[in-house]
Length: 433
Image (cartoon, rainbow, N blue to C red; front, side, top):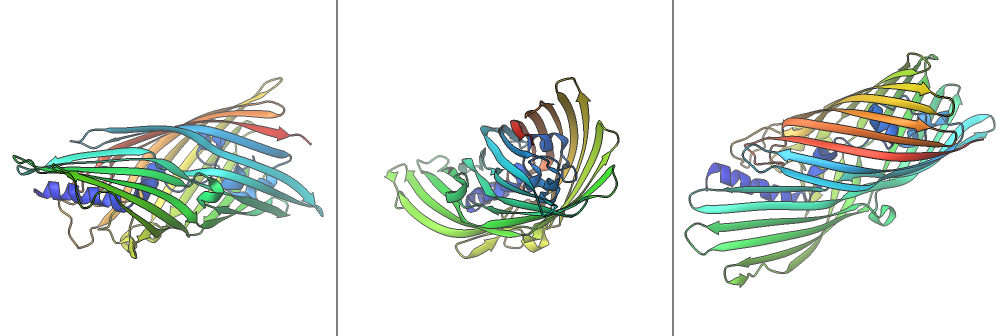
């Protein structure tokens, strides 16, 4: 087999090894900062943070709420990966996106807010197929998966001084709590020897779920001046306990092989790295707001552990300690338009994200290869209609990365162009005092 064929074969094995978790970051970007259609439309929200969705973006900012609010949204997700020389892969799905509730309280003269949320964090729906070989062999690999990881939890915020909010959220990722922290994956490898009847088809089916794991998010919101607010959000590293049930089906030209109809259940851990966000929002006028969020993520602390072996989810040939830190920048603008019986808002945002990847290599070996970051650029649009008790929101976000996904979207000596789009719509009910 040629070096490209060997590289592709190892790429296929790497896709199976990660059980789909390797795609979580590339599929969704860094861990979602928070829920909310309005927040998606403006991209930068940690320092604005003045509606029910603040409990997941920056819990400290939820002290701004004046009445109870409940919010729900659903979304449609579209993604295309286009590796040069390979067939483009497109996947689509639709799902409930989040459900949030927040209740402001004034106890002993101190403003406080408690909240509850369910949030779809990672989407795993995708398809990948590769065909490779040389003058002696022909090989085809495909992977199809669907599902998500979600979190459910509680939030609390307090305003110890006027204009200063401090808060925290505690979330569980256990599938028995969220009922949406699992995904299904089927990988098929079809190998044959040219000019002979030898052909082996292997199908690996995985059912993966989160059986344990919690995380905490802390946030500070501060009104520095009437026009300027500042924010700091910290998300410590956390572990998810993962259980995977594997079923193997295999046959050759003579029928089922000795590896056919095998099953195995394994336990593992998914370690997600720490991150921190600095944000600011500047109110230019009663109708205009500009916001900026900057996020740092320590990708060298990103790994999975299965069968006692700890590895980087991006590639088993990458030493996770060598992964560079990632820096993301989000910029947004919101314009409010007043009418007699309602209020409308229009939003636009831009984003830049650095996600962990690996250097292009003509041939993998036992020595670690140099990692680097993949760069994604994108933008968002959003709009709202606000009545006395109801708010209707819609937002569209598009992300695109060129020369990304080495060893994930394609073979280890190629990269791809990856484009994704998310369209979400939601409604918020406000309980007036």
